[in-house]
Structure formats: structure tokens, C-alpha cells
Image (cartoon, rainbow, N blue to C red; front, side, top):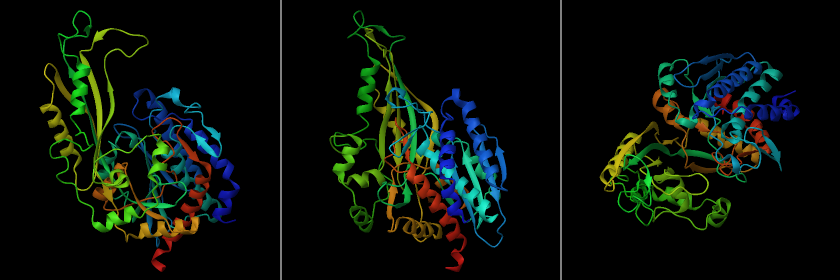
Length: 458
């Protein structure tokens, strides 16, 4: 039996294991789920150990553990570093889910559950591929190191010091990432770039307490009114970010790059229908794909304050809060952009309220891989074998912090080789993973390992 036959024969078992994995509510941002995140780490370590003779270790961090595994039994072959993450986003708002977010449900060829697409389904794939090789051949075709973290959804905050301290342990020729979704489910694609991110939160405070809106309304500042005014100042009416200096270091696209993006099969009407939006919006002078992939953004992620319960409570709120995030492109630096946004907030505070800026540091730089990288070429070749047509070359509007960290700290590039797709509602209610993508991914990862192992002969 060859590995692909083994995987086909055990397809149902792979799906059941994915369901088991998704049942663990490993929400990294919520301290109430710390035990669940630890349980997910243990589950991943056990899967690695069951796959075959892999040296598995769990590394404690100030946050959630890093699970590491290695098999170095092919001394003349190259070494891949496989990356994935076992933490997930919160399921909120839970009432928008059609089924329990942590009780996976199969409907019409899709598996629904929080984290099933981002990133538990895709990261289970290399574990099962390793198991298939060991079960049928007793060895892998190349050397493989595995690194699975539990903090990707909160900015991989403890991964940087881990990578910096373990450069020799993690030495490899290329990172093959199970994270980083394909663009569309009906077109194979390979991603060559991702945007960076930086976030912050801020609060406005007026009076010493919330006050009766009849007795005091109209005579003292309302913190929510002030917040609305301050947030509105972050953009000009046409959608351009109004923060001074925000665009100063943005690297412009070449004419060739803009032509390549314009030639992609993108239907804007379909895009808007898929997300339920009446029209597009954003920085003028750029197409929707250019704005999604190659232009920086500033988004308000949350605003709150005052009474939010049932019925009414007639108060004038004394506090208001907001969270924002910026997606970054070359050559923007997260800390500089954060400072520019903070300065804008400080200089536009409405009269009668005070500002405080805070929030955990959530930042990552943008990333791009060169077009002739051997790992990228292997991915393109394998996807053409699996799907029978050449994959599209695309970019990613979202952020994978580890790609820049791997490049800066270890000197190795990351190939995005995920089999989730951008429409699978990760970070939203009713996240799902197409079951056929699980099986396509198993085939593709098997072919990738075999192809990359023999790349020096090609």
C-alpha cells in the first residue's frame, strides 16, 4: 500500500479525528479557556506521537505551549519546517450559529465548528500524511520538523522569543505552512504575500460616573458622542485613512503587478453578494482586489459604552471604548503606524473628555516570498497535479505573523499551503471546512513531500 491509498482507506477516521479536535474550545484570547488550550496542545502532541517515531516535545512559554516534533532520518534529503496553530477565535456571537460552535456538525459536505478551517482542519493534514508514510514505508521521504503554536489568534506574542532562542533546533530549508487560506474554493491558488497588522484600543472618559440623561443631558459631555466623533476623524469621507503620515512608507505597486491583479478572474458582484454588502468601499484609485491585498487599512473592530441591556436606561455615559486594527503593506512598520494612530487620537480628542490608549501589543510585519523560491515552485507544480490546472498567483489581505518571524529570525521563507478557503467564515459565526478539501489537502501534502525531497534531481 502506498501513502495515498492508506489515506483513502482511513478517510473516515481522519474526519472523526478532526471532529474530536474541533470539540476542544481552545480560545487563546480568553483566560477562562486556558485549560482548554492546554488540552488542545496535549491532543496535538499525542497525534504526533501516534503518527510514528517522531521526537515530540512541549515547550512552555509565558502563554500557551509550543508543540515541537522532528524526524531527521533522511540525512541526504532537505528539511521542511511544518507550521500550524491549534488555538481558535472566540465563537461570539454564539446566537448567530446554526449549531454549537464546539460540537462540529456535518451539513452538505461541510464540517461546521469554530476553528475547523482556521486552522485545525488544515494543520491536521500534515499529521495524517506523516502517519501514512510511516505506516506504508516506515519513513518519511525527507526530514520534517513540526512547530504548532497556541497563540496565533492573539498575535503569536510568545513565538518570537521562542524562535530567537531555538534557531539551531529549527534550522530548515523552508517553512511549509498549514495556515494561510487559498483565495477561492473553485480555483487552486498559491499565495505569495500577506499584509501585516497592528492593533490598539482606547477609551474616552468624561464625568466621574454615568449620569441621569434628564437631569444632566445637554449640560455635560456624552462619552459615546465624543467617541463617534473621534472614530469618524480616522477616515476622510472618501474612505482614505486620515491619519497624518499613514501612507508615507507604502511601497507602490508596479504597472506589471497591477496588470497581473487586474487579469485575475474576480467578479465584484459575486464578491459583494457573498458577503451581503450592497456596494464596495475603500480608498479611491484602487480596485477592490488591490485594496484587499496591497493597500493598508484602518478598521474599527469594536465600540462600546453606556447601557446595552434589554429595554432602556436613560443615562449619559461617562465612558466609551473602542478597538481598532490596521492592516499593513511593505514598507510599513507596525510600531510606527501604532504611534501615528495614537498621535492622531491625541490631537483629535473632543472637548470635555480625556483619552487613554492601551491594549496588548498585537503586531506583525507584512511578508512576501520571491517568485523563484524552490518551495513555492514545488507548491505550484503539486497543485497543478492535484487539480489538473495551473494555480493562480494571489496575495492575502490577512496576516500570518509567523512568516515574517521565520524570515527575520531563522532566515527561511514560508510557503502557504493551506486547504481552507477565504469564504469559509473563519472568525465569524458558522465557520466551516469543506470535507473534500481535507482529502485534497492530504493528497497535495503527500505529493509535496515527495516532490520537494527529490527537487535536487529535477
